[in-house]
Image (cartoon, rainbow, N blue to C red; front, side, top):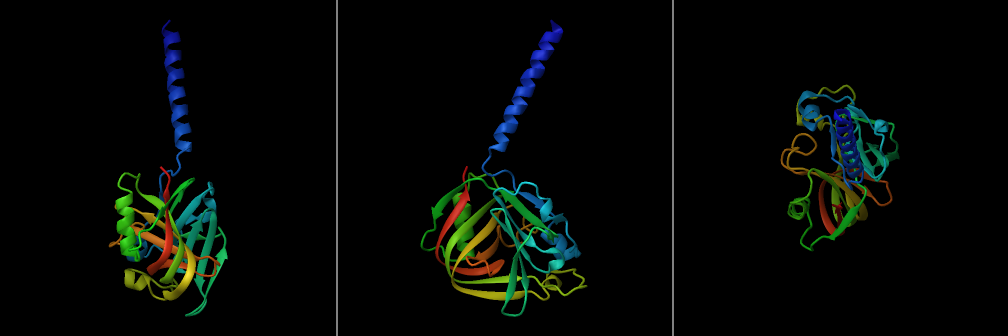
Length: 239
């Protein structure tokens, strides 16, 4: 009898574990994953790759951002497509599609369903956007990925372009070679990650969001520093 009871208990435990795994796999936005840290790159000079993007096994609904190893470009994954941008000149850049690249730090997540929210007319800047997202997501599981699609009146993006062999021990040194680009009146997609707990990890010390922008024609992509929104739709992970 004792063995029968033990068998029933084991069966129940296995069934519970199976059901838990099933629920987890159906989550519309599983936990955000973070490899490396921005502060280690900026202050400790840890420029080498901590992750090869082609080793991320689940690329379905994959979103990610970070810099390229040794700060020689910017990385963006938008719905399973990986982009790498590099400085070509003060006014031009190259944007290639490839997973054959690594990053010293990377934040990434898989999102399987989105909820569209029209931005209020007064939401024009990154700071206003951050506050709006924070208000709308008080009951969300954090951190999370989000995206915006639409028109910007203007925007400033940058691409890291650290000279080969440069040693880094401060943000000022890390930004040597950084090149800024202006975007005017273009349709764009912006991929972002929100967190109040990851300053210095994947957001800067004075922000809760990290954003990369790519134009609709996929010819321009980089880290988003400033923008003026014309008309955009915000997409948050569907709970």
